[in-house]
Image 1 (cartoon, helix red, strand yellow):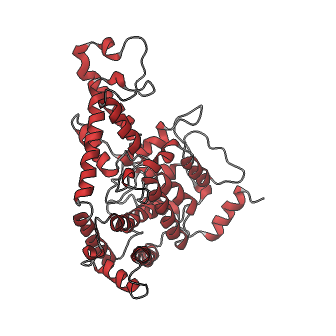
Image 2 (image 1 turned 90 degrees about the vertical axis):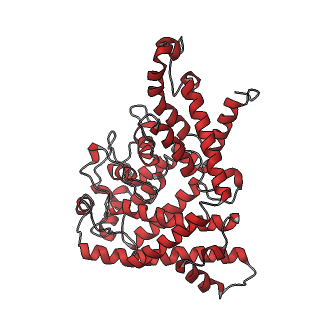
Image 3 (image 1 turned 135 degrees about the vertical axis):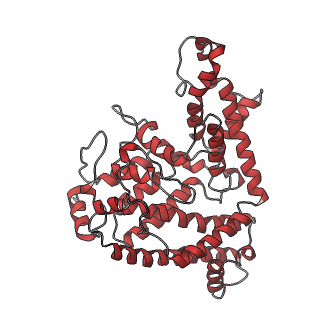
Length: 404
């Protein structure tokens, strides 16, 4: 039988000096018992996969609302693609793939319904009371507090390296979170691989969905040399009438081109930094402006930025996408305001009370105070919904003939 100790010994023999070894983890907050055949990061990965928040990702928007069609990526398929790309990068750099996978599968657990449109709507509503909503921090809250799977503690009790990787996840759309307890703990290289894999997946796969939807065409992207080089390379090899095959192959080539560049540049940066342990990596990332160790070359970053801008102009600003965004905002705001006006409509598990309603208990003159207390609770309730359940909730609240 291949035991946990065998796997940890294999890590010692095969991983790079700067990789995070399972046996060197700073452990969990509650239960640090060891499993017979699984390392700590394998257990983290499994806990994420079996969580309620992970299952809900299947019905949450990436770019196109799930009602638009079955082909388009959901938050779950995006998460799986990020994990797959990140593991490929990690394997080439001799990093800990299990740690990479655990962080990747958990990095988007905190997303609300309707993708970034839903996040912006919730953040705007929280700003009205001087607060904020950030899906990155909520992902951390889910794994440390909101999931209820164990009798003696809340959360999933993940290892510190996974928690820090989730909290300090950084991309164009993700801002690193800060808590005093992790102020002096930097992310691992495995966490930085997930960051870059997320950005890589976004760019390439949004092109795929955009082309499928018809919101963009190949001609819209021809100003990008990164797209044009990929297109011309593939176009010469395929039947020009097979548009679907052409799309798949171009996107595949795009991912491969970016990954190759990333690996070459990252290996050069790691050699230059000459880090000899995962602890050195964590300290390195605590510097004020550390030079990225896992990153694209300057030329590739410039090419990617140009293509990203084209997508912003052509896809994310397309009237169909903007319509979906505005509908999402109205749905989120409608639900939020309905509950803010009367928090007693919230399900008991979110707003527990007994006997009289909270409004009766506190009196009408204290409604404003009640609403301040209720606002983050309402926000968390809505953020936990899928696209479908948010639409259904909106219908229940505003259609008097809808069954509650």
